[in-house]
Length: 433
Figure 1 (cartoon, rainbow, N blue to C red):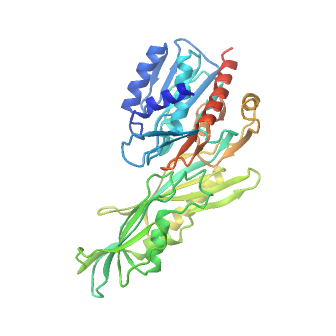
Figure 2: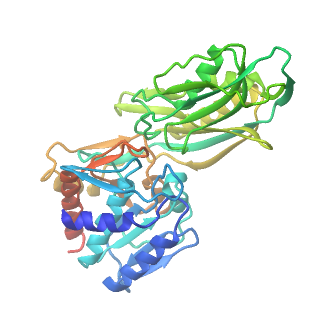
Figure 3: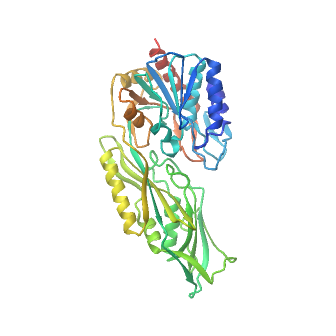
């Protein structure tokens, strides 16, 4: 275990927030050279390491970027018994643990293809643009978050962004006061795997307070990442009476220093859209025993030139259902006066696939996790992209227990990290014979 922790802590000291590459690229080039591997780096900063002239049967894959709640943040790691967490930030076990496993196997000299992808956390950007060939027949993704599950399918997804510039300067004839409504330190969580856990959304709560007080919207900013449930939101409003704080983490204060002779007011349609929008689970799949379709009200921001920008993240286990949800959402945006509705970071669902590779993983894994089972998840995994790009691949995903990824509460269990490493190492032994 000390080896895994040592390697994990070493890469944790490298700035791996999405969009940052230089530190990890420099590290892996030097590391691979020292261990006897060659590295290819493509135009979107994906990395393939392998031995010269080798054609391995198995590829191991992890993404090297992490979600950072503060720009360019480097987590401070805290070990408490069996728990590994960070000090008031994301831990980066998603997917730093997967990277650590790979680095250790490289040090041990295993003849495999090792794939590190970039910018997974902001839309599977690296995987979608990968520009090198793989010889492997099998790929093990190390980015799942439950030790007792072998993932054999995942949701597809698409981000939806829209703008509303319907605003005007209002003369404050009714002598409204200007108030600030803010909420912070909500639990947060992953917009896929945690979407059914009834986690409060900061944007929805602030908008509810605005709506209930019949206030007029002047400014609003909330949310952190498209794949995270909003932790923080702040709004400025004009109102006849002070809005009520509707949550224990919400504060409302009068802004005495704001000149209220005139104020900029956004259309009530913006508030009505955010208030009526159905954030969360849209449909369940009883056969898969999980969420079928969901959508996350991820971010909202106000800009002097763009107006109000709203960002959503939709997911579904079925490509048709995902397309339908995206089209319904676009129609709803337009009916509330939003313009420039755009789709981005679209990726297909990974249909459940049980084959000789998944059965081999199950056989090996049961030695360490007897209750392990084949499952699908509502989160997005790069397996879907790799399957589309390399149809010959047989894929599956495993990983240790990681709780509350993408939030400051993220932690992992060290005994779970150890068990899953043994599974990965045993599989590496089998496929290098």
